[in-house]
Image (cartoon, rainbow, N blue to C red; front, side):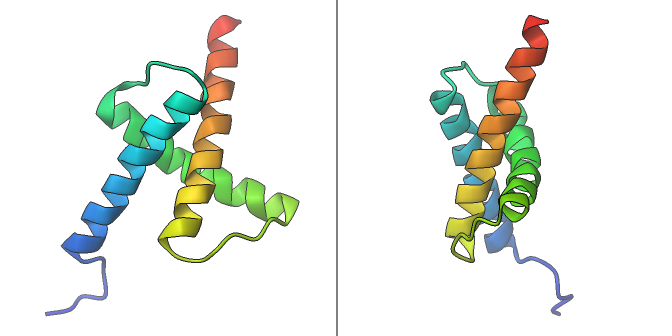
Length: 89
């Protein structure tokens, strides 16, 4: 029965994207990461932050998983830089 929600395949793909985005953001900001769960959390928060920032600035990205990957990566990088800045204070 279809409940209109995400299928397990889509959930697995989104988790895979979140893991990749968290890892990539850590590499871009030259950090050690926060573990798998921390990276996923940062990627999820980064996806929201990236979508907000891209809409605020008016930047268009492709729809679908590629656009999600781009927005989440940019947002996660910004989020990691902010976390590291706060940690230094």
